[in-house]
Amino acid sequence: MASTILAVRSALAVVARHIPTTIFTFMIVGAILYCVHVRKRNENLSLAGFFRFCFPVEHWFTSSTRVDVVIYLISKVTQKVVTLGCQLGMTLLVSWIVLGFKNHFHLTAPFHESFLALAIIVVLVFLLTDFAEFLSHYVQHRIPMLWEFHKVHHSATFLTPFTTTRFHPIGNLIDGIFMSTFIIPAVVVAELCFNLSLVRIVELNAMVELFFTFTLLRQLQHSHFRISFGPLDRIFISPLMHHVHHSAKHEHWDKNFGSRLSVWDWLFGSAFLLPKSEPVRFGLGTIEDERGDYSTVKACYVRPMTGFYQLLKAEILHSIAEDRPELAKRIEAEQHEPALSRAS
Ligand SMILES: [Zn+2]
Ligand SMILES: [Zn+2]
Image (cartoon, rainbow, N blue to C red; front, side, top):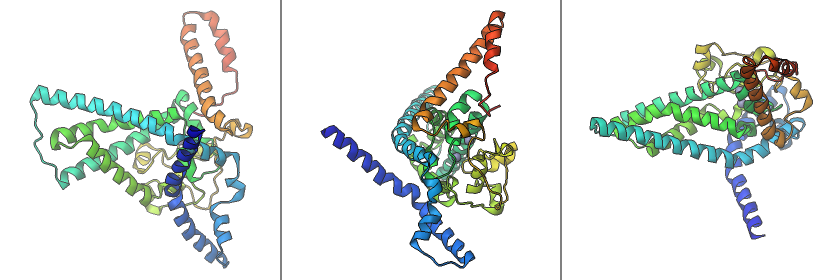
């Protein structure tokens, strides 16, 4: 009984600590947009109108949003475990590389910690982290076995700030591995050249991340507010650009992979700008939407595993079939099943 009370208290503490920060920007920007909306239509401001504008009942009280909220709460634990694991792995690897360099070349840091040193490392870590996230996202769309896990994020049929954490833990792990691996060179340079510790770099990076979260309205990438940055869409990902990424329309698939910077999408040809007036329907855009394949929390955790297993089995059977043609018939039969993956 005591443990149940403790568990409930911890769960409530998690909700109290995290929900206000998650929807803080959402409410502030929602209030501004509501004022503009009311002024355009010559209507009167009202509290009920504000809540109707920010939380449209027909969308917020759906299975998609319910799943978002539950996964958001579960991810508070799963995401922490994944992040800690990746950071531990990165710390061990960085220590091993730095010690190796120091012992082999008898190196001591040639520069002292200064504002310039911190600025160089912060910019380097920011660029590497953002590119790693872009690449991880691209890979999860392009490799069918990884797309099975990323589908969970795209199965949301309406975007709320809670959709930000709607990921399978394996998806979180893939992102964590990419980001940890990419920032290792910057951390090694920081330690060898400026004697900056990993903890200091992580702290600085967290501050930069917080700054961009608020200035780029990252919480609103997953919301129904259609905000474009105009000409700045060429540099940063606006909420409207991320709406395109979640669009069920075929021509919008595999566009706007970026998290903060859109420059990677412009460089690699995946950027797509949408006129503000054009409506977007969110979802996978496959038969899975109509069947509601990801409309429960259980399905969001189990389906990616079974999908991954089936694709892996087909892949293994293919390679075996080259030596044993009698298996070819079985593979052919499996290939006649309806294609559910939109990953190419
Ligand atoms: Zn995606
Ligand atoms: Zn998203």
